[in-house]
Length: 469
Image 1 (cartoon, rainbow, N blue to C red):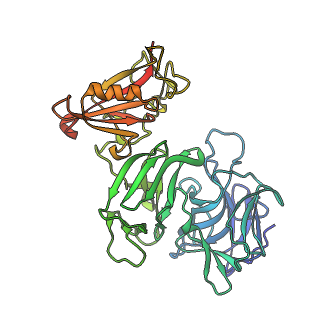
Image 2: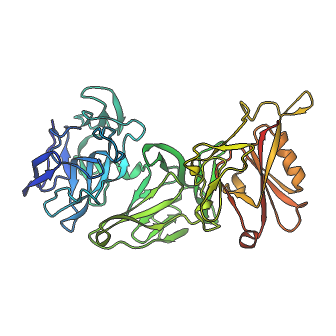
Image 3: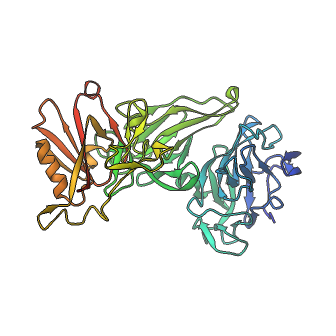
């Protein structure tokens, strides 16, 4: 049962959802400690089932300053429900979502206004119906899988004089004390998305979901480093596919998303950014956010009333060559992407698709050794060989390759990979002379792409290690 003290009880309205008719106050952005919210329709009467099967159960709601339109809600959300499923939506995040509201603060637009979850507490530990969020008398915000059950997530603010919780007009969930000072805020703990006004501090990450249907942390992440804003695939070592450098090192550098830009500053209080990405501006009465997605894109989304829904309006991360093939997971592991974004395996003799009907799922070697780091040679017999793909490149930044060799021949590059048990592939990168090139060894092979030398101004061959026949 909800015990929260809700604010702004100026107007009672009627919410017509798939579950019936529910009385609900106008807007309720604040709750005093202690408060309890259970993930049930009875406990959270402001709930909606959307046309795609998604469910929103609001615990706190901050109406758009315009009085209607995309607004911020804190509560329980289930948004990865397949349209074809016959069972109710059952996998819930406790989080913050953008929901479309009418002038009575009713969540509406059940077809195009699907909740956009922009922060979540429990993406690695999904809860079901009946889970409970508590703002305890001791000041801790916790999520339990069942009433009185296991704690799935905690804000870690016990004993810090938290007096209440508030969802702000910019989508920031704040725990505040008796002087209205911020004790904890969701803006300091980003998951896969940023809202206008939010920063990504040095050492923090945006981490993409595993897939569109799997909310767990994936392998793609974005981070602010001493000298760059960079995006990686989590591997050993991490493989970098985007690098926006800013010259001099700044140990306290952080990125801030404002209306019209994503800017990196050397330290708090700086007025001039180290580097800046210009973004489309957003007008009054609507909402914009950016999300790092499992395919490696950092997309800017906006509610477009004339298009009746959410739409991507900008791709923040731009790669060279400027092609979808430049992203690390576009064709899956060992997949080769061509300019028309078609995916295939390196060759039929040594690789097969993971799913013949969906070539973008990647490929697997037909005879994979138990480990690449088994002895490369045994009793004088070569255990591995290389499959060579001329005109093919790899996304990993040269500076983050497992090992780099300079001014070597192609044969020397191939030998270096065969002799290194941790090497899964070698990219040989050269100009007009194949006897004088650069060799980049990779510990893991994700998506590769075909290259046009006249566009990229270099030649590249991928040599992929497979088991010797």
